[in-house]
Length: 62
Image 1 (tube, rainbow, N blue to C red):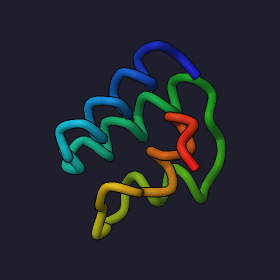
Image 2 (cartoon, rainbow, N blue to C red; image 1 turned 90 degrees about the horizontal axis):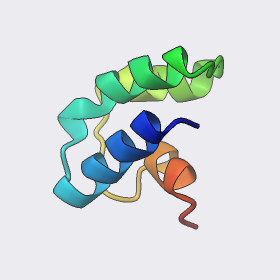
Image 3 (cartoon, helix red, strand yellow; image 1 turned 180 degrees about the horizontal axis):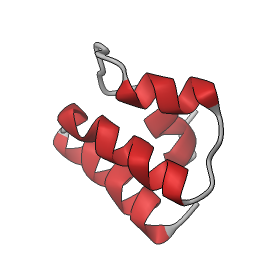
């Protein structure tokens, strides 16, 4: 996890800006994430909503 990844996830969560999920996928990949499930979810059409398992995972929410 990088500060960029956390900042993106936080912004997505707080602003409900789920259109940024593909950007988050790129940042995760740049940070070394190789999880096909996570990257595919971020790049998928969704629907993405607050409570998204990837964003919650990155922010340490349960």
